Image (cartoon, rainbow, N blue to C red; front, side):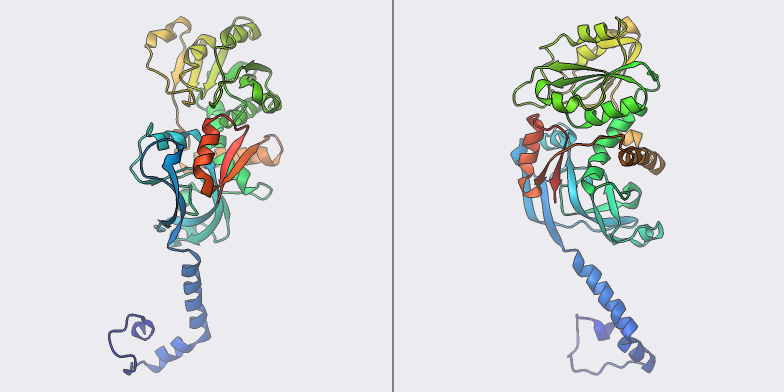
Length: 384
C-alpha cells in the first residue's frame, strides 16, 4: 500500500502493483481519502520557513534583524506549534541582545508570546489541547511567526481577555505577581509600606496595582512625563522625578527620595523596596528600608547593581534578594496559580493593563529603541 502512494518511485510508473482486494477497497474508500487529505492539509498549513527577528551578533538595537526565511521550529513530543499574533518586548530581551546575559548565536529574540495553537502533538492532545485554542506562554524565541511550545508552558486565555493583554501578562504580569506575592518572603504585611520604583511604565505598573490588591501601602516613583499614567494606579504616595533624556529611567538625583520616604513613613522606612532600575537606585533602596525590611532587586534599567559589602545591610538588619521569574514559576501548578489569579483580576476589572504600542515585527529594532529610550507608558509589543 505504501508503494502505491509513494512519490519516490523506484520502478517505472506503468509497472503493475499487486494489491489484495481488501487493501484496494481501503485505498479507494472515501474515509481513507478524507483522512489522507486531512493529513496533507495539516502539513500544508505550517510552512517550512517563517519571518523572525534574529540576533547573529551582540550589539545595539540594530543587531536585531528581521529574516523572512528562518526555519520554523520542529514540534517535539509534548509540544504544540503556536501561530503567534503578538510577542512581548521586555528589558531582558535587550540584555540578551547586548550580550549582558549571553546567549548562543544566532538566536530569535523574545520570551513572551501569544496566539493560536496551529498543531498539536499526541501527548499535548491527550491533555486536552486543541488546534485553535487561544494561548499565551513564555519560552525563548518568540519574535517569530511560529513557536514550538511545551504544553506545560501554555496558559489558556479565557474569554473576555484579549490576546494582546494576555501576552502582556506572561512576563511582566507574572513578574509583578511574584514580586508582590512571594519574593519579599513575607517580610511585609498588609497595611505596611512598600516602595516601587518606575511605576510609570511596564512591569511596575502591574506591581503597584497588585501591591494594593495585596493590601500594602504603596509609594511609587515616576518621571514627570509619566505622571498621567502613574496617577491612575492607586499609589498612596507618588514621588515625581525629572527625566533622564533618552533613557528608560528617571533622574534619581533630582529629588531626595530617601528623605521623602522617611517623611511619608514617619521616619520608619518601608518594609519592602521593589526595584527594576538597578545601578542608580541601589543606595536609595537600602537607605529607604525599615528595620528588617527587604530590598528586592529585579532589573538593570540604569545598569547592573554593582557588588557591595554585606555590612551595608547591618544598620537595619536588612535583607536583599535578586530573584528571577523562572524560580517563581518552577512547576506547572505554580505557573497556573499565578496566571489564574492575574486573569481573574483582569476579568473583574481590578487590573488596568495599558498596551502602549504594538510595532510590526518588521520594525523589530525600532521596538527595542522605543523601550530603551524610556518612551513607553505601558506594555510594548510586536504584532506578528
